[in-house]
Length: 208
Image (tube, rainbow, N blue to C red; front, side):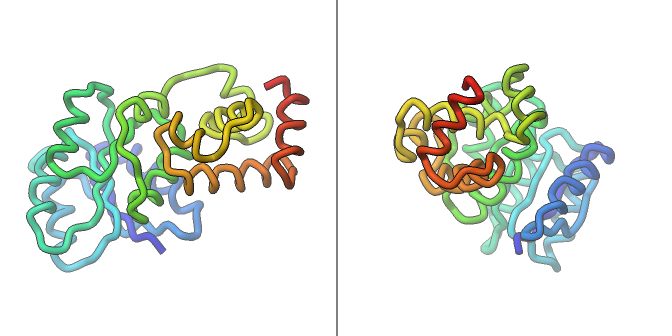
C-alpha cells in the first residue's frame, strides 16, 4: 500500500485527485491539506510514502514544502503537481529535490504511474516526458474512449507495431523498461490479446 498526502489549496481539484487515486487498491490517501504548513505539521506525527504538492499555496508553498521536507532525516518521495509547463520551474523543483513532476492537465493514468514509479525508485525525470503527458490529441482521446487506452498506451501500441523492443520504447518515451512492461500487460488485458503477434494484428485492425 502506497500512503499519499496531498497539499493543494484548490479543494475541488484535491478531492478529484483523491477520488482518482482511491480507485486503485494499492493507493491510500491519508489526507488533503490546503497549504504546505499543514502538510508538514501532519507529517511530524504521521508517515506518508509519497507527497503530492501544488506549487502555489498560501503560508508555505510547494517550494517551501520541498525545502522543509528534504532537510529531514526521513523524507517521503515528493511529486510536484504544477499548472506551469515551464522548464525553468521544472529545473528549480528538481534542484530542490523533487522526485517527480507532473502537469495538472496530464492524463490521469500518468499520475498513477508516476506515483508508483517514484515510490519504487524507478522514475525517470525528463522534461520532454512531462510535456508529452499533457499534450492534447483528439486521435488519442478517441481511442481512449473506445478501448479505454491512455495516450501513453496508444503510443506504446504504435511503437510495438513498428517493431521496437520494450527497451527501445523506454528510451524513446523517457520511461523505464519495467514501466513499459507494466503498460504492455495493461494493454494486453484491455485489448484482449495474449502475445506480441496478437497485439500487432490488433494494431493493424485498429489502423494504428
